[in-house]
Length: 95
Image (cartoon, rainbow, N blue to C red; front, side, top):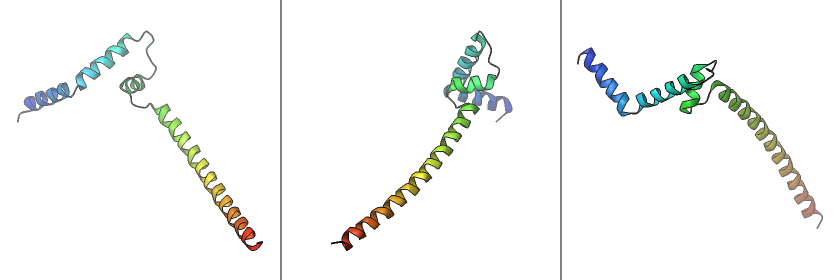
């Protein structure tokens, strides 16, 4: 298969899968932006629905906070379970 035919097959693949149409739309949207964004790549990612680097950092921070909260709640559950067991033993022994 020659280089030209490989290129043509790849172009057809991109066209069939909608990549060319999506890229055209995003580039037109960027072109029509009255105030060009400082980071064109983030604009393209956002337009196509991908999280931007700021979104990823925010999600990582939220995840870390949730992991910490989960650990705290796990400790509280363990403490309450021990207290409940102690109360159950005290109530059984007091009868």
